[in-house]
Image 1 (cartoon, rainbow, N blue to C red):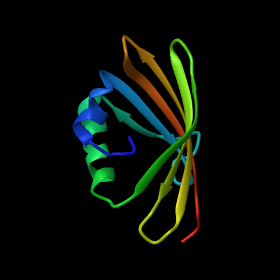
Image 2 (cartoon, rainbow, N blue to C red; image 1 turned 120 degrees about the vertical axis):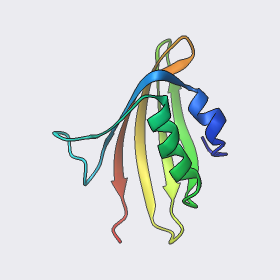
Image 3 (tube, one colour; image 1 turned 45 degrees about the horizontal axis):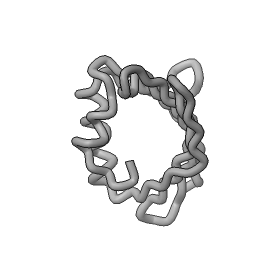
Image 4 (cartoon, rainbow, N blue to C red; image 1 turned 90 degrees about the vertical axis):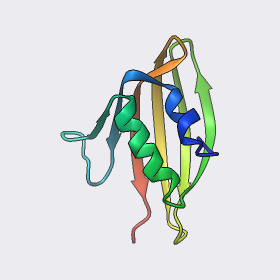
Length: 105
């Protein structure tokens, strides 16, 4: 994730993985939803070319879930903090749920 190697990053997701994002413009009643590895990989490619710096912290890992904090630093020094829970099966992410908070522009 931190190195943003898109192919390696996308390989962690199951073919039918689901990714939900909750943030200011995607509230609880209408989260952003990515479905399937191909759609997730396309999103990861946009992240990797955006110039954002990613840092993972506070990881907690269980037998079928993990949680961590992701700090994103944008090119203009604004920051995003994400708290993420991933569900996995057979060493692949099947579901990811992000809750984000952004610095104002």
